[in-house]
Image (cartoon, rainbow, N blue to C red; front, side, top):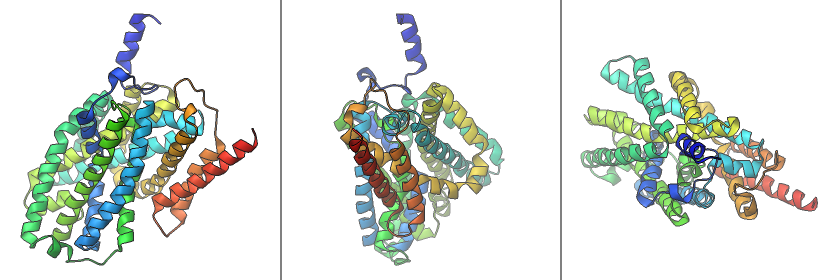
Length: 413
């Protein structure tokens, strides 16, 4: 390959959608921390926080955040190590775990859910903001969707810039809303005591884990740019623990005080309409960028087309369907989310058992049928079993299928 052609390819795919991230493209702690923190700043997590605030007392809320956050951070932290160690995105990791063609299933699930959440996120911003400002919701949806798509398609550099701007805004405005609610409500104990007892601590832990375990499965897509495994693991664990806990706190305190389940309406109830628009827009923009980035990478794995093009395709589809998705698809997305933890746990188990497969020189088999079955059976189990924590049930069942497959493979040697 000539130097001219090589440079042209590097310009086209600076996000290495079809290969490992080289050492010269790796980033340090600050850049990765803001990207991962922005990833966890998810509006739906605030709604989960409101459920926790309206169902647990202060002690129960703290324990739910600590226990659930520790489990979620550990899961994502291991995926961060794998992403950084290999330099591969989640879809390329899945090629090794599920096979070249088998990874199409994991890519379809990852891409479909993340594009769906992107569309829902756009509508979560455009519908209430349009109502508040008295403008057409479709006009605002198209503008917001295309702007978010433009930054996601630009790649990791844009994710870093958007997160660096948005994260401090969300923290400042969220803390202000929380402090105001605490002062007006007579303290945290009084606020949490208003409606405590509606849910158990175990249920609360399940809410915390389930809030972002599906999105966390895509961790390697972003953290593969980390300069070292240490940077990858620490930025991910700290960001997931702090980021999710902050979202829960913002939603729980404001929700318990006002009775609202969304910080947008909480802040409006507090007379903070303009800050509400800013915090909602910044919050959704950071998470939507990461969701669409994941969707673009998933389509790249199936089509072989560079991520910039596939991200635009994903963004246009998500924007066009945004309002319909918002009103009709959240339930389906929640069901599909149960298919993502099995993907993550199988990649984790396979990486540590068969590390030789996780380099660019390895040629994966066409389909690993047991691992593919693990995704399907794990997802079905999570939706059918009505006790325990759905995400944990899905991973446990998928792990059992994985080890059965490994045992069968050994007997055939």
